[in-house]
Each structure stands twice: as C-alpha cells, then as structure tokens.
Image (tube, rainbow, N blue to C red; front, side, top):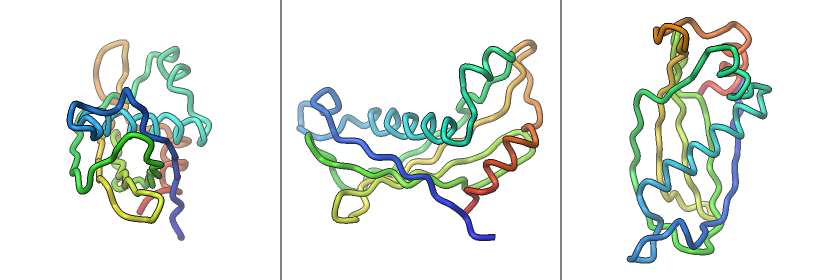
Length: 137
C-alpha cells in the first residue's frame, strides 16, 4: 500500500522570531501542532468533538532537530506522515522545508488516546486507526 503525506504551509511571522531574528525554538513545535490539527481536520476528526466525547489525544513525547534557521517572511512547507501506529498511541513525523526544498527542521510527536473521564489510555478507534494508517510511512 502506498502511503500518503499531508502537506501544510505557513509563512514565518514577526511574532515567530526571537532577538536573533530566527524562529524561536518552541514556535517550531507550535507550527507542527498547527499542522497536526489541520491533518486531523482533513481526516474528519475534530479535536473539539473528541473532547466533547470525553476523549483526548494529548502529546506524551515531542522532539525536534533544528537544521537551518527560519527567518521572518520565509515560506515553509511541513510534510507530515504517521511514523508509528500502536494500540493506543501514534507518532507523527514532521519535516519542515523551505521554498527551494531545503530541509529546515524535523519534529516528532507521540499522542496517546485518553479516556478523559478517568485519565487512562484507551485503544484508538477503528475509524481513527484506518485514517492514520493511510499516512503510515
């Protein structure tokens, strides 16, 4: 089965940069999360609806590698794929590229399906599992 990739685009804004004129490190994770929310919405999963159903997909791990600086006004593409799909969790890999295709950063996030009524992990729904599997590397 051929895997799909979800692409997300943004432009670096003034509020993203630090005193050195480059994207502040934590904003890279914020942009990854923006891509994650757009990805979930594209698959038909509203994070708001999950919360209403007393379910959540909190981040339990994140990591980032910063390869080249991102500066104000830069156009950035995030290429998102599911790297791992477990029983109750999944890991997403995000690769950040500039407009010429140069790699800027790599981010990984791991999310776990949580029953918000008792705080324990629970299996991913079959619908979510099937949707995520289409983007598995």
